[in-house]
Amino acid sequence: MYKVLIVDDEEFIIKSLIKGTNWSSYDFEVVSSAKDGVEAFEKICEIKPHVVFTDIRMPGMSGLELIKNVQAIHKDILFVVISGYAEFAYAQKALDYGAIGYCLKPFDDEEINTILKKARNILGTADNGDKCDIISLFAEDSESRQRLDAFFKTKGIMQGDRIYIIASIGGKPLRLKNNLDYINFKTGSHKEIYILSSDRLGTDQIIQDTLPEGIKGIGIFEAAYTSSNMRKYIDSAYTLAYQYFTTGTRNVYIKINTGNIDIENLIEKYENLFSKMDIRELVQLLDTFYNNAVSGVFSIKHAMNIYNTYVKYSIKVLGEDAFEEYIYSFDDLCYLFKDLYTMIEYIKDKITCCLGFKTNKLTDDVRNEYFKKIIHYINQNFYKEITIRNLSQDFTINPNYLSQLFRKEVGMTFTDYITKLRMNYAKELLLKTEYSQGDVATKCGYIDYFYFIRVFKKSTGVTPGQYRHKDE
Image (cartoon, rainbow, N blue to C red; front, side, top):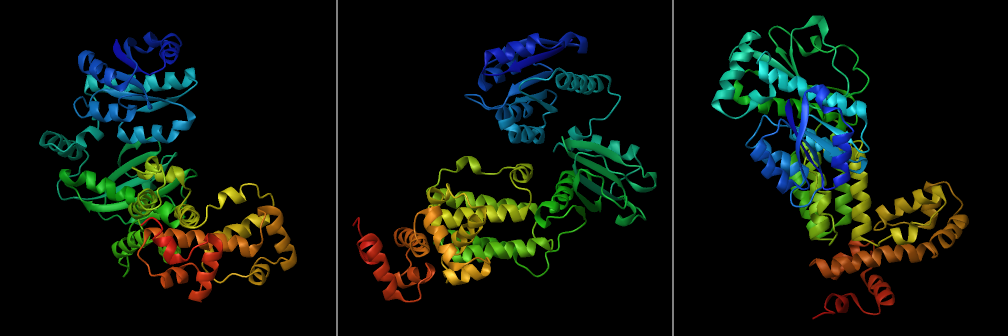
């Protein structure tokens, strides 16, 4: 019998899983349980179970931390994640950490049975030694490298031979041409690696002409086989496969077209603009990011850097409570956003609202869907020269009717609305940056500095200078 440990901070979950599962029919028995990650870690070290079913959110040590800590010392212990629908993204992350599957609450008998069959097969393979657990051979130690070399040798691949590493993201297996001989293994619930010799074989001779339905992206990386570099090769192949996210196109990717663009310099500029709270330049640079990404210049790593930079500065500069918004894996980013365009639009919305006027309080009750599009445009462009006449032309709407919509939907005139946006942005700049008052006026959309002073004093009761030094 294989030993099972169940970890959950809710007693009824443990009991329902124990009583509702026919463990013995799959050669398993539940030997113990724990109510938090710390207790579970101690019991795992003591009884060394074969399989651990663990919740994700627990006091003391989360399920993800438990998996990482245990696998650092006991790589042969299998983990199954117990999660609710709200924690689905964390369940996906657990698969990246090495979990063999997850069970959603409320439990489904067939789902649990399938996981137990999978666990038994893995454990049986390890016991019999009939098959090679390929993933375990990518560990960074000399013994694993020797075993990996021996394994590839059985497949006819020697040190220095040219190979293709093909990464596939999606729920369907790939169809390779000409009955090619390949090595295949999963690295996640929807991620697979295919490795084959590239001897006299072009990339156009590998994948079938049409991507199978359900495949999001494929990356093909060519290299000379060495056991010490295989992890790096696989990472490179996946980086290419994730180009579907940055370009917005399902495709087979074999390279990232960096061209003559200094991406690192652009991202450094992006970080500096956040610290300066310059909305105009930030929005323009975000648009530049997207325009270049469509042509394949940006990688998923750049996309994650762009998003986490926004999160970092929303905490540091904007005072937003966003610590839990940090992204730690590519899969998390792709789970949150459909593609890079969606991510960039989200960031633009956030920075224009956070750095400018908190518009959501005024626009939550807007019912007119077409008017929402107009408000969205104004929120992202309030620092530009915008008039009712220009809006009416751009959105093909009568200017008098548009004026009525402002009073009806947000309870103020167009002029009052855009003034609030500009004044709140001006107050943020005066308090949190060292821009001159003239620069503040320009960044808020006022060409005439003296007019800006009059509007600011009318809005706040003090001059910009008095506002900046009000607490001194």
